[in-house]
Image 1 (spheres, rainbow, N blue to C red):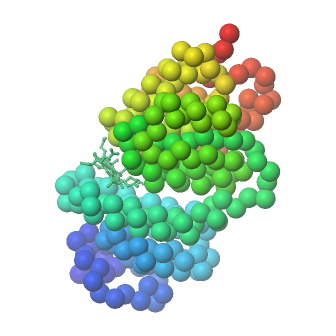
Image 2 (cartoon, rainbow, N blue to C red):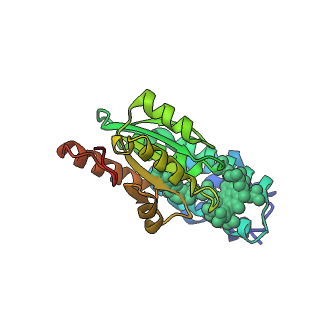
Image 3 (cartoon, helix red, strand yellow):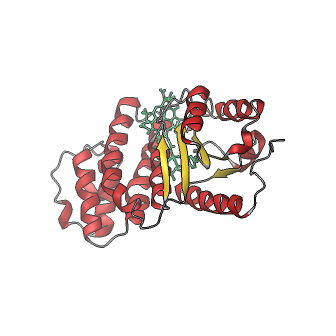
Length: 248
Ligand code: B1M
């Protein structure tokens, strides 16, 4: 098999001159390199594609997110295990770090504040980090609480930063119900309507977002940044507080 066959079992041992590959082959090679957790190669490939005039969004979606999707399939099927997937995640982050300033490039004044975190019990942060980057790119000030965030941490951050938006991410079917714990706690304390609540993560869907009382479920980072702008603008244009449970 050649390195650009996108062969999942490729060991990636051969030294490939990434700069000599066509765009298509380089993209496939990056899927392999992500699979093999090759951080430096991912950073190099990301830089090459940007130098060739690719937009940060295209590099992100075609090379990195698609590569991670392939990793996810083999993880699900028991072909890859946690240590290997962690290496892939580190490699993905190396690419994202290069894209971060480009995705966050904005001349605009802050359009609002967002507190975001991955919920308690969940340590997946790649998607949440991407959402944070896209929100920064859309002009939001983002306070990122990281992973494994419990309700008290969310609420202290809301107290401290008084954001327009609370964003929660979950990647596990076992952790997504915790979003409801946070929303219910805010409702019980009569402060649900103080902020817009956005939720997202691979196992979620619109129905779940509606059922737990979020203001919006966001399929991906691009939708999250669009939705954030739209809901903040709507809220400012309309003095009625957002959210299903309105403070009385
Ligand atoms: Co985990 N893992 N993992 N994992 N992992 C999944 C999620 C899984 C689907 C893999 C699989 O079986 N196919 C599966 C979950 C099954 C389920 O619950 N249905 C799973 C499992 C089971 C586990 C462990 C339990 C494995 C184990 O230990 N036996 C364990 C759990 C640890 C824990 O959290 N307590 C575990 C561990 C790990 C690693 C540590 C190895 C690593 C995480 C590293 C890290 O994040 N720093 C990892 C990874 C990398 C994955 C996969 C392969 C990739 C996730 C990812 O980064 N995707 C994942 C399989 C998959 O999803 N295909 C899997 C790329 C990212 C860009 O997409 O995160 O979906 P995503 O984010 C998107 C959208 O969802 C959305 O926008 C993002 C960008 O467009 N979005 C939001 C996300 N958050 C949002 C918030 C918003 C709005 C949109 O508003 C605020």
